[in-house]
Amino acid sequence: MQRFPSAFLSIIACVAIAGCATDTPSSPVAPTASSGQISSSLAGAPSNDEFSGEGEDDSDMPYTMAVIGDTPYGPVKLAEFPALTDKINADPAVRLVAHLGDVKAGSSSPCTDEYLENIRGLFDRFVDPFAYTPGDNEWTDCHVFKKNNGLYTPTERLEKVRSLFFPTPGRTLGVNSMHVVTEANDPANFAYVENTMWKKARVVFAMLNITGSNNDLASWGAPLPADAANYQSQQDEVAARAQANSAWLERAFTTAKRTHAAGIVLMFQADMWDPADPTQLTGFDGLVQQIGTLAQVFGKPVLLLEGDSHVFNVANPYSASSPFHSLHASTPVVDNVTRIVVEGSAAGRTEYLRLTIDPRNKASTLFSWERVPLN
Image (tube, rainbow, N blue to C red; front, top):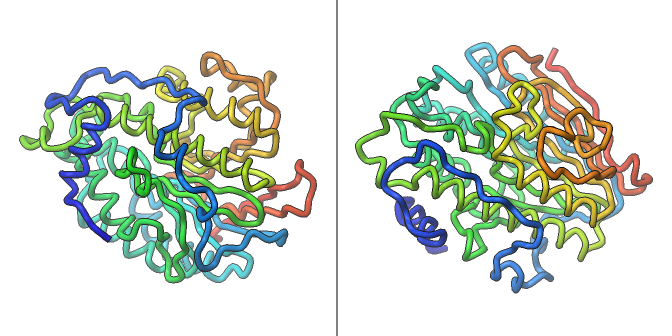
């Protein structure tokens, strides 16, 4: 496969939007995402070979996965992580492990190459396929301003995350890695190797790079490194990722409809309904609207798996009676969406979520889960 230098990828991604700016904006604006928007390359992509390859199982048999996120935070969680890995590896039901991002604390926690490489080594101990999506703590928040995470340009750190955790486009990590569909194959969004998709047990699974820090609208501030202009600016990053995520959501729902999927699972780091600071949620308005509109048309169960706010929670934020419904403007009312926030951070209990999909069950019980503590 032809490989391109990381700097070249950034340049091309910027040109695809509107050209790179050389200075970091103080207030980037999140583009609105419409459910009618989709890249022309995806609209014309072949649809009969998306899930071809070894290990694909779209039978009616149950499928179980382990879900973790916001871990390891700090020295205690880092020391516990090998034991958590061993416990998941020993779970006979688990067939895939999904990490929802944030492999370190968000502030006063340097984003060094050495730390990220250590985490990659820990991930490599998982026996089952290991699917990961980046969190804000390992790239968006990697700056000095307010976060005290070192003198980095966040988009430079994103390039490092991509090269380290997505070395082979279309393959997960894990001893027994698995074929997945990757947005890297979309010429309009080829930098987004981290956006992946697969289908198991008649359910479409999609991972997207949707991060906290208000979806990267929180200012990177100053100073930035002297070579910051060599990397994608914050404003261009926000625009490019919005385009890629919008197209990937469209593809997930289109694929689910075309293949008569029983449901959809969307996985990303950001808690788009984090009640701790409602003023830091505006960057998700378009995504919330798009997901709700697509789910409403789909009509079958849609499960959102998130991290970010650290405390386990289950809700339907699209329900008219939900306190979350008013957190975003123009949120549609949709009854077939469930949101789960996984437990995480230094304060949270060390655990994993054992999620089971059973397409033999009625729609209301397609998804079931159990919290499994380390101790």
